Length: 178
Image (tube, rainbow, N blue to C red):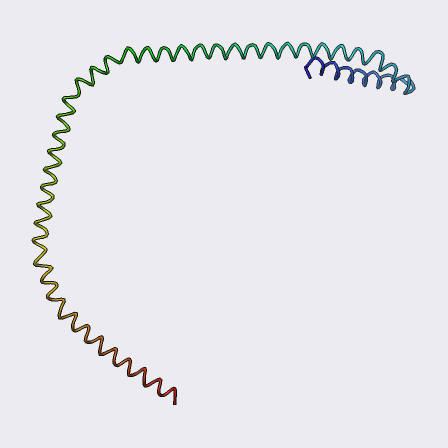
């Protein structure tokens, strides 16, 4: 429902209600007060509500038209900005391409230097690893030779303890069974 119709209906209801209340307060019977309210109050209220509805409708249309205009201006500005960005990119493209061409030999030289440096580092690391392995070999052999007899003694002691525990367990079982 438009604002004009809403204003008309609300104004008629409000005007009729106010007119009936005034007539009733002045001592008129309720039926006469209703007639007076219907004749004058509702018509006057409807006219006032109609006027308010027209004003509100015009304000909303004006606000919407401003909003539409602002959106159109925003689209225009955005389009101009995009066009300017494209134009700037097109202007900058030759300079960027020249800079890339000038930088290619330097980048190639830097990559070759990095490759040589990496190869040298890998060679040195391999040499250090071989040297460390060579130095560790006699120490590891010595540790193995020393660990062998100790491991045999530990195994023998574990076997003796196992036999003792087994005999004790068997003895307990016999005593408990008897």
